[in-house]
Image (cartoon, rainbow over all chains, first blue to last red; front, side, top):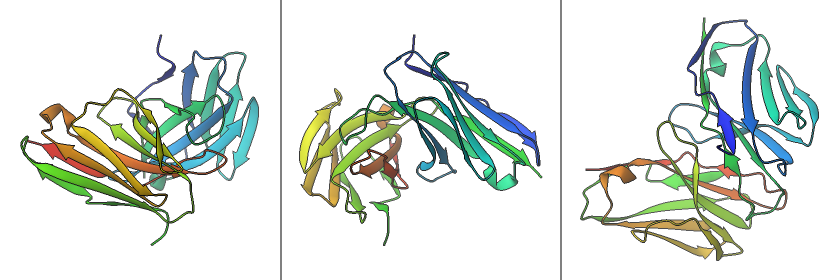
Length: 113
Length: 111
């Protein structure tokens, strides 16, 4: 079983839709969970960062972690064409420069005007 | 310049060429990384430098050779690459919290 599983999509939605992006993982030692957004021809940029379980909200974005199910989600409300990008989940056991960050494959999202 | 910069942004090379990728971070971070991003695969960590010392080498072939002369600069020297090495090579840096900031990447094509 892969450490992190993420449906690569592609996912296509109309503008204004609520988008749900998900990852599952197998390593129960993961405590830090991140979502990165990667536009075409750019490097990933950190979008959301959460520690342990619970929800975190930032504007139209909500990150949710369910450690009991080993499942994390990113919700995008009122999606915009500018949200079209690949979204990567990532997680690790601890913080620190050398701690290995494990990524999902990324889900490609297109928001149609 | 702010953040993490990478040059060149695009590189096409033959299998017998030698080239180098350059990364520079302007964030005061003390750890730097090279990642490889191939189509339909997760980002693969290649090398980690912490305080200018290599702390991790994830079984990367010797045709890739990293160099970290100081905490702000990171190089990836390439020689006798294979076509399957074609990918987006991403540099990242971090400090303390471990949250990594990525550069824009170098799109490498090996003919």
